[in-house]
Length: 206
Image 1 (tube, helix red, strand yellow):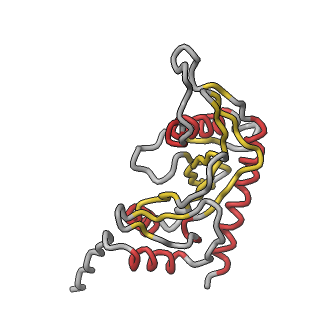
Image 2 (image 1 turned 60 degrees about the vertical axis):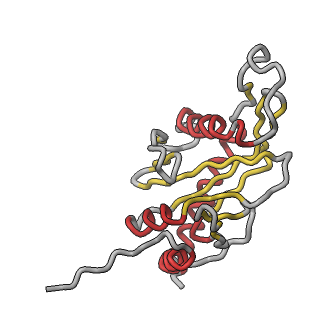
Image 3 (image 1 turned 180 degrees about the vertical axis):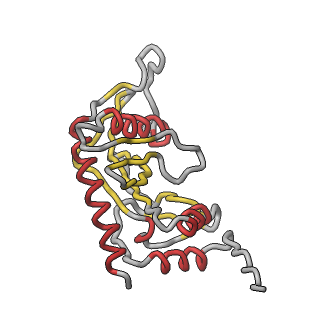
């Protein structure tokens, strides 16, 4: 097993965690709208607010980049992209996917990513290492508040792999024990776990 590769990913996760710990102390609670628009508030489902809260996190990361010691943050990504933002420090880019968990609800397995998309990205770009960052929120009526005690980061490369056969997406708990594996082992596991990945035959050499 390539321990250097595994140690690098672990160090990157710990570094990004330190940044987001600082950000949480800066994030304000906020109202989604006003009582005249939503007089009965929002249903307590994460999907009611997830995209908007993710935008708050990524935009606040960029807005407070200097305070956080970052060179730049980009969040204008295509909808098909696996990551929501790119954090840049010196010559290094960290690829971040932001997730949200309602701390008032029980933790269940969540869809993490489509197997084929993960495989294609990891196979095509050897320097691409995705970091999932899950923030905890509480909300009541129209107000959103970030939980300073909930912050969960992980790499898809270290996930306990379970593929939902209905949609061919990896499912996992945000809090889980990592399974350390190399990139090559990860790619093989994705291929073996999914019927959607069809490898193109190699061309014969002349």
